Length: 137
Image: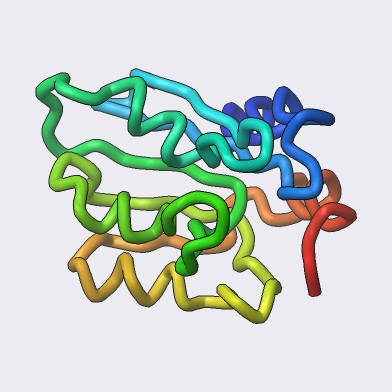
């Protein structure tokens, strides 16, 4: 998760007003790709990371993301749906639940319905110390 937090920092200031989210995808304890939230209207962290492994054969990948994947379609499609549809991602680690009322656990619900293993609150203190100021509450 700390590698995903490092990616979050790379998103600033271009990602604003979106929160600076970071994501890493891991295969057998090795990071295979990293992503972070791009300028508004471009990829969010999860989509950025997924895009980088498009067409590559992997099984049983783990995703680490600093903020709950979005459940709603704004300028970009919902990241939770993209993850849910990607059969390579089997387990997701999320540091903090998105307090935005348009999300607030709904992204996690989408992932669980898709039968993904969801783990929440990994490195919460470190991620929250950085990300909290950018979140809609």
